[in-house]
Every structure is written in C-alpha cells, then in structure tokens.
Length: 221
Image (tube, rainbow, N blue to C red; front, side):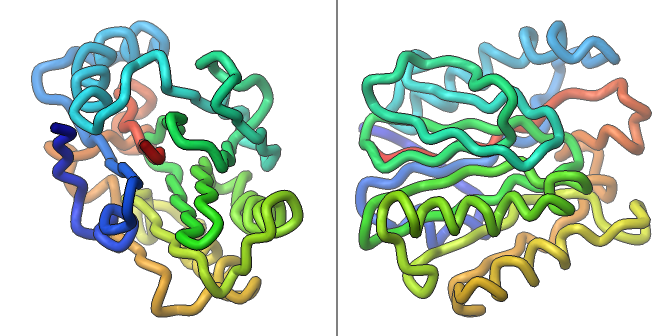
C-alpha cells in the first residue's frame, strides 16, 4: 500500500484521487559538499525509498536537468525515465509518470489540474522566475491539454526568502500564478524560508554551496 507523509502545504494536491506528491527535506547523516553529483548520489538511497513509498519505482522518475532557465518538457508514459536536458520544468498528462525537481533554495512549484489530469513540476529560482516558468507551464497546460487556470491547484515548497535573500521570487511566483487566472484559494505557499532551519532544509546560499538537494516529487498512479 503506497505510503506518503507529504507536508501540510501539499495537502490540497495530496487529496486529489490518484495523485502522489511529496517534498523530501534534508536527510540526516548524509555528508554534503560542493560536488553536487557526489552529494546527490549519497542522497539517492533515501530518495529511492521515498519514491517507493509513494507507490512508484525509481524507473518511473523523470527529472529536469535544471539549467536555471524557463524551458519545459512534456513527458509521456512511454518515454524512458531520464534527466531531461536543457529544461527546468516538466509537464505530464499520463499516469505512471513521476516528476522530480532538486532544490536547495530555489522554489519547487507544483501544479495540478484535477479535471484534465495534467501535472507540472517546476524549478523556479531567481532566473526561472524572471523567465516566468510557472506562467509558461500553465499556458502549456492550457494549449496542449485544454487546462483551465481556474481549475488548477498550485503549491510552492520551501525556498529562500528575504531577508536571507535580496530577491523575493516567492512573491513574484504568487503574482504570476494569480495573474493567469488561478484562484487565490487554490494557491498554497509553504511560507518557509530554507535558510531558517538548516536541520530540516538545505540552503545553497547559507551553506556556501557545500550542501545537499531536497527533492520535490509529483505524479499520478
């Protein structure tokens, strides 16, 4: 039986039939350093276990390469699990696909259309927010799958915020979501700053690059 203990700010998504969602925070006891790939390899066993508890296999996980841009890939159930090159966002309308985004201060934005069954997961830090990756994803959902922004449910995971960081991209993401017609009642911001609790979260800025990566996950079984 799939088990998930997603944070409360993901409740609206987690309550959707067939949808699995989680945000994996700091993993205690895992050594981190400035080598991102080596650190992520050390985190992988814990991340694999969490994926399995959500009812997915590691081979169903698709991740964005994350180049701090605003490009987005559409993932289908017949696409082999991979890291999608050159993109910072992923969209799928298929069951059996798990989307993943790594973050360590940037915002993970979750978008779900409970009517059309479309999901999006986005990496939106300073540059991605400047490029309006969230607005672009919502437009893609509308154009490709017929999603109505009024139906969408959106959540923003913990990310760095003022005064720890001079740019309030969390506020900008909120404005971008509301400006395309998503009702305020369907937007949940965790309100958590990653820099405020290093026992629970990784912060690239505070830890000066010697840090791990949290993993945002969103899929439909």
